[in-house]
Length: 78
Image 1 (tube, rainbow, N blue to C red):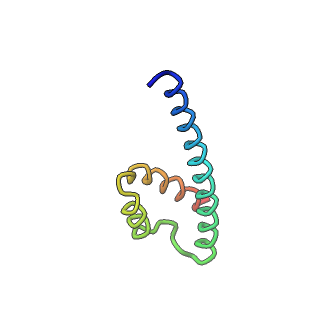
Image 2: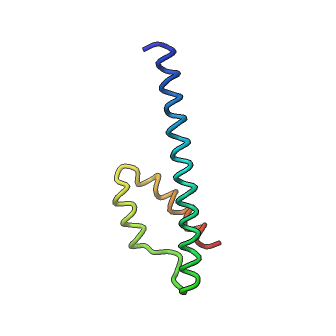
């Protein structure tokens, strides 16, 4: 594996990162909308059962999703 192969792989990582960022932005947008619905219906922002379900689905990425959930919870509280 030469320098070109490493460069190509790093470029692919950059592409994947851009896709992840775009999806996270969309997730935050949806979470903000959920926050508006919850506020309108007097539903608490935090839903521990829902968070546990998301973390279970995340599997080996649960730690990453803990941070995502925290950011989304903040977006819902705005």
